[in-house]
Image (tube, rainbow, N blue to C red; front, side):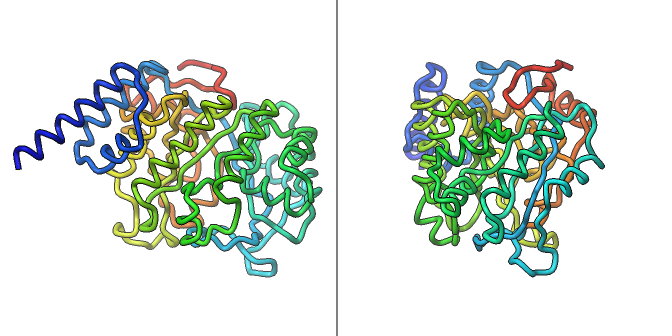
Amino acid sequence: MSIVLNSTERRMQEIAEKVENQQRLTLEDGIFLYESDDLLSIGQMANKVNLRKNGKKVYFIENMSLYFTNVCEAHCSFCNFRKDEGDEGAYTLSGAEMIAYVEKYYHPGVREFHIVGGHNTNVPFQYYVDSIRALHERFPDVTIKAYTAAEIEFFSRISGLSFKEVLQTLMAAGLKTLTGGGAEILSDRYRDKMHVDKANVEQYLEVHRTAHNLGLKTHTTMLYGSPVETLQERVQHMIYLRELQDETNGFQVFIPLALQPIKQTAGIKRRNSAYDDLRAIAISRLMLDNFQHIKAYFINIGTQLTQLAMTFGASDAHGTIIKERISHAAGALTPDALTRDELVWLIKGAGRIPVERDTFYNEIKVY
């Protein structure tokens, strides 16, 4: 028993030395960290990396989440947001209807619209272009962060345009950056098992590669916590993104997303553990050495765990959001929004320095 323990300690020490010397971790290193129960050592290493990159600053933004339609051709097994056309609760908003919604909640501090939605085949690609244009013309000073790589692949299919042409059309209408969703786990085996009826691994990566080559900075995610994905697939997911970042340097932030159960009444055995949430933050900080930021998404992990995540490698606390719907449709029990004051309080409470930012991590105000 002592021989096994000593070899485990020695392996952790080797990884710690790599981190200290800013050497890249391997797939095997990442799997070892995931299999280790030494969460505090992993967290300490991640904290060291984050402090080296960002000091004690933790970033947030005043933003709004918007959803033009929840009608979707895909039937991903983890999604409770989607509807079929004609279902109770199904909707598709016009640009004018979305502007009316925004004006109810908008204030001059809002810097970003975060826009995702269903893959709705009942409207043409032009609908999605016009949606962006309407918002951009009404709120020209607000950055439009819209659509996932999976949505771009969907737009390409329904329009007959290439990924590049789709992106150029949206950019002309006001698009400034892509959201990170649609990645789920970048494994075709996982995507088949979980009925991820949208962009495959290569398509997801190619959309972001194309966006980066057009000058867009983008965001990317990992949806972890199902019984389907393996630890190796989680680490390989990060390596795919790390390799693309080596090539393009176009990703701004990595966002680990804890899978939510389908219902709010789901018991704790159906929810991700706090242990795994912190481990996901810390290991992503260690594996993604060429990413500036790792985000702690309070919508999925809650506010208190978000505070803890700031000492486990996270340097971004997301934003005010204003009415998040997708995770809450799937059973999230967390707040669906926070105020600027609450975010500042949250970050200060973790012993960190709150920094209000714009979409591109330019500092607006240090608190």
